[in-house]
Each structure stands twice: as structure tokens, then as C-alpha cells.
Image 1 (tube, rainbow, N blue to C red):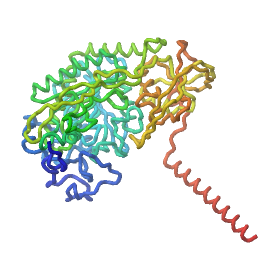
Image 2: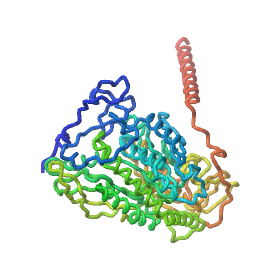
Image 3: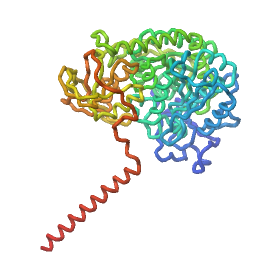
Image 4: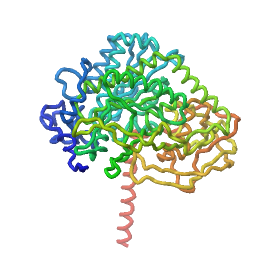
Length: 618
């Protein structure tokens, strides 16, 4: 088994682009290797580090591999398939296309739910049978589709535009919208799409910010998610680059990704088991069946935490986990049916683009059709689960626990990959980390409420975006509560998604504390109860302690308290309008502040200088 030290052997040589790409005047006529990156652009494993707006390609598949993935006999008319198109759909092209759909269709409304870090629009499309609003008394399930979460995954974004076009103008739109409503955010990451980079403009990945809510894109998405409370959520991506890396030592020329489409459900163990089971047995299985009937290969999505080991001829693969930082998992806690769609494609530029878009669209269509055909069952299951969450939070029951942490179960399961040398599909043994069969490792009894001091309004602000009703105590009160003390602490060694993490272990004991008027109360008889717990329980992987929104050290009492009595506290709801938290400083006020500090320092320096000279003269 030969180790491939030169990656170009595996992929048939790095691509040298011979055709021009739409770009700014500063990069006209330059190949990607010659074009410098834009200021602030982030290096990305999937593309050359250069500024080529709305395009990137870092590998050309060998011809015998490309021949395994022929384009379907389907014609698309979305912007990415315009004649002689060489890059991918720009934001300007997308917005023009969407507004044209809006003028031609009476089923569609378009809203702008926010702006990216570089002030690009984030459009949201609402599809209903009569083009009306979706209100809280809706009698149909709503399907939510978000795409191009990573900017360098254009197949997912283009498939969302195809879905929008068909819902707006074709007969299938009439058929589906008779039984469901549909929400589409076709481009979550417009900045990353422009730079053709994986993460957001500032670098952090949007798909990992759904608990922290550091980014304007995730704030906008989660506000919309809470507004519509969809029963089914699809988040659409492309995969591939990590698979090539992981199997570079397989066989004589390495191995690569095989499956056209990989799917995964929401794995968080706090989601009712019947929802997780129906997600597999009905919605995913229907999608697999329809895709395979159309000639596309499918499997469950896995990632690669460890590379291929030539000594044992195995690789460790993981289904992922139920961490709420991911969009699939935060939506699952509504609760909802949630799914990750991953299509084979990143790194390939426009290779097999029609196939990638078509397989992605068929997957989306399958989920829409299955939801429409089973709309009553899906609606009632989600409604009952949400009602049960509210009911569970009204009393403290020692048998009612929230799962704070879980661990994947290790299985022996083969994985299908491509042998690059022969083009054959082969099975390789794996150590398979199953999130489907994960087991709880830390559970705690659901409290009646969590309390925080009035100073922690920033926590309330984040949780309100997640649909949490926040209250404040009307009067000071002395309460017996459960308190946390940090007994172990592990601080991250490098910045992770914009933060140095602080993983803690705690001991809990009952103590009496005085809570002043205005103390924050997060009652658990609401549908967002699980989000509250996973944000505030310190050991949770994505807690606000973990990400230092609540900074603590070993030996500290954490200013989060568990109220374990059934009596409702004397508290009133607070909202954005009644929030006492000062607004973030504007750029002008920061300039004023910095200027004031500069003036003060200059005055102090001048005073000390004069004083020194006076002493010297004496």
C-alpha cells in the first residue's frame, strides 16, 4: 500500500483554468494561481487561495471517474445554467431571478430577513397555496429549506433556486401547496458565496453558530425559524473534500467519495424517539428509494474525525452528534423533523454540476412530497411533542430528565468509496461512531425554572432569539435553589469559532440565595425549554459557560440557578422593548470613547512631563 505524498497523483493533477472567470478588474486575465486573495479572505481547503468571485475549483477528476457521474437529460433555466456561464450564480443574479419569479407567481412572497456581515441581502421565500401569510393558526405543516450555508457549495444553492422556480410556476407547486407551506432561504451565506469560501466573511462557520448567535446571519435565520416554527427542516450542503483527504492512502492511487447524496436526521436525544424513528423510516427512506430509482447512489452522512490507517486498513467515521450549535440540531429542538442533505460535489468547480443540482432537487422534492402525503400525521406528531414539552415544564418530576451530554456508540460497519485507480466501488472497514445509537452520559432532572442575576441580560437577548419567553422578578425574593460549583476546568488551547472554550465539570448542592427584583427567570413550561437547558447547564457542549458568555473559573459559583419548586415565581415577561441592557456601542460612540481616552492620556503625559521638568529645575 503506497503512501501518496503528492496530492496531485490522487486527483489527476490540480486544475489549471484556461477560461476566464467573471471577476473584478483587478483579477481580469489572471489564473487562480496568479490572482491574489481579497483582503480578509479566508484560506479554504476546497479552493485555491485567490479572489475569483463566485467560483472555485481545486481538483479535476480523472476522466474514468467523471464518466461514472453523467449529467441527467434535464434542462435547467436558473441563473447558474445560463448559456456560456463559467462561474456560479451571483447574489445580484439570484435576486433578479427571485424578483422575476415573484412577479410571475401568485404563490410567492419574498422578504429580506437581514443582511450579511458585508451588507448583502438574505432573502426568504414564502410559498403558500394562495400567496398569503403563514400565521400561527396554520392548518398545514411548513417545510423549511436553507441552502448554501457554506459559500463554496453552489450545487445546494442552485437546487434551492430550482425548487423555488417549480413551486412558483409549475403544476407541482399547486399539488404540494394544497397540503403544505414552504419556506426557502436559498443563500444563507452570501458573503462566503461571493468569496467562494466555506465560512462567513469573518471566518466562523455559519452552521456552527446556532447556539452562540455571534453572527448576523444566524440571528436572522433563528428569528425566522421561531416565527414560522416549521414542522420539517432541511439544511442543504455539498460534501467531498474531506473524503478525498481521508482516503489518500487507500490502494495505489487513493480513494474518493462515491455517493451522490448523503442524508442525516436530527440526532439530539432530547427529541422524542418517535420523531427520530419516523424521520428514518418514512422521510429518509422515501428519499433514498426515489433517488435510487432515478439512478443516484445514497447513504447516511458521515464525517471523518480520523484519517485512513494503512496499518489496520480502517478509518474512523462519525454520523456527527446532537450538538445544538448545528442548524439541524437547533431546529430539531423546536421540536421538528430535521434533515441534513449532503451532495457529492465540492472542489469540482462546474464538473457534473447538472447532476449535482438534479440529485439535490430530487431529494428536496421527495421530502416535500412525503410531508404533503403525510401532512396530518406529521402535523399531529409535532403538535403533540410541543404540547408535551410545555406540560412537562409545569412540575418537577424526578423521572423527567434532560440529556445534557451523550456519546456515540462504536460499531463495525463498512463504507463504500471509489478506488481512484480502477473506478470501482469498494467497501472499506470502518470504526463507525453511531449518533443514531448514542447513549446519554449526563442527565439532570428538569427544573421548574432557571434564574440568573439581572446583569445577565445578554443571555436573555440570545435566548429570546430562540423563541424563549424571558421573565423578570417583580420583587426581591429569598429562594432555595440548586447552585453549581466548578470543580474541574479545561480551557481550550486555541480560538474555536471565535471563542476560547471553557469546558467545566460541576457539583450541585441546594442553597439559599436572595434574588433582587429584575432577576431573570426562564420558566420551563415552554416549547423552547430544551434550548434553555442546553444553553444554561454548564456541562452542555455548547453552553454559554462553554463559550464564555458566562465566564467562570475552578472554584466559582456559576451565576445560574435551578429552581426546583412547583410554585410559579412572581415574575413578569420582558421583551426587547423593556430590556434594560445597554445597546452595543456604535462605531461613532467607539470613536468618541477612543478619542476621549487619547485626550486623557495626553493630558496625563503632559502633566507628568511638566512635573518632572519642575523637579529638575528645583
